[in-house]
Length: 393
Image 1 (cartoon, rainbow, N blue to C red):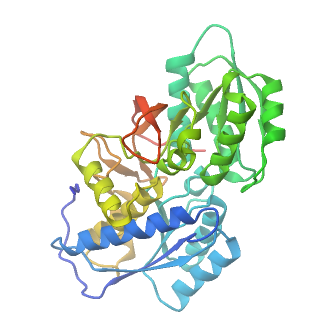
Image 2: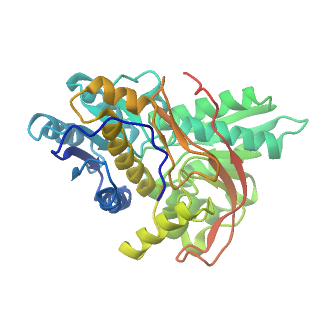
Image 3: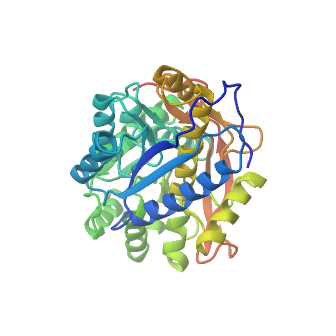
């Protein structure tokens, strides 16, 4: 695997770099944590074969997606284990709490999977950096997709449904903001906020069918999205409106869990795709993950891989972990060639927001037997590069 590296001083430490990661290994988000653990092992093994990189000593603990439990784990990592970095976290609500603790304890926190823009906006601070693209990048690309494919004379009727917490609220705010910037004529007809990890969406689906939007923007993820799609298909929602999920809908986990129940023609995206980009780097990443697990990776795996490579690269460039100012400078200016990067592009950190900027690929579900148990994969791909400067809140 190929990395784009900066010139750096000789590594000034021999002790391993201690990393404490928080992921759900059980419960609704457990697959994301288990995939992340596999990718962490892949990254650590790869780094051990490279000259000049530090040894990473990584401890992964089960957060169970619980805020208080995650805070307790983070405190133990820092105050008892003296880790150099915190990393991980799937839920943005959990990440906000861990990030605030990282700020108070002055511990670097490398976000690898959560996506609320608040963490790199109103709640950003000098100790937090995120290496996966966030929901704001996804909504910006989504608005461009709508402008490119659906812009018309009559205003589009747009509805929204997403989880009842910061990630969902920000997604609805951002899709409207970027539709306005793209000059799309639209009318917001409704917005609904089921609780995270809800199981019955029939009330919302029936209400949406009565609202009759042209486009439904959905911001669910994980098993919540699986349940919503299955129930919506049974009730006939997809025959009445165009369904779009720009941040998590195209995650391989969703495609695999739904299998033959995944409808054709949904417009989706994700933070990593097993079938795009068609590069040697991505193919090697997917192949190795499959060889270790017998399954294809969710996007959480790509985020965890990126987190380990980011930590090792920053420590290498800073000459160790002792000089926090040098570490911060290295993180602010990271540029890495990652599995999700198409040819000619490398992921880069925005130095102001501490948000990694990445290309977004949006496609339509089409029959594809090559990645079983998924029967649909994204095709007819449209690609949207990030802006040169990331938009503020």
